[in-house]
Length: 130
Image (tube, rainbow, N blue to C red; front, side, top):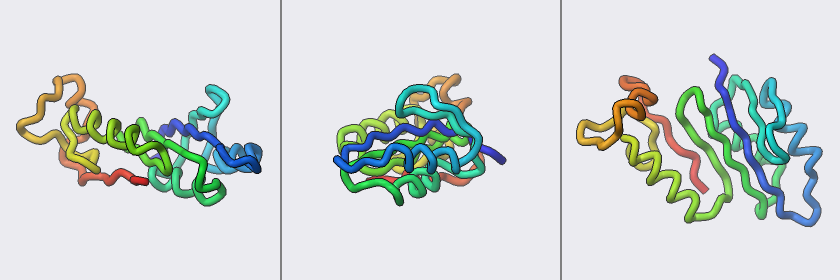
């Protein structure tokens, strides 16, 4: 099954090669540029694998965030600790445990609309942390 990925990146290296990163994004699947550094890609890959592939050609000062809208996953490398923790807390606030996008726990405060977005019965998926 293909996933709907939103790919965002920032290149901070003085020798940043935007062309190489854009080429790597294009190799993830069939996509379109939404904004300068935001792409929508239909891909056979999940968020963590897509982020890892892009990270291979990036510099340690760069950052990448991939959100899989189909499977409710996110993968990232080298985003700020504050952003990483915020994403995990907010994802958890709609019924997921830290580091997981699994089913809503019984005592969740998730609204029915948000809980419906999660896929009960599927195994938990792990976040790809810094």
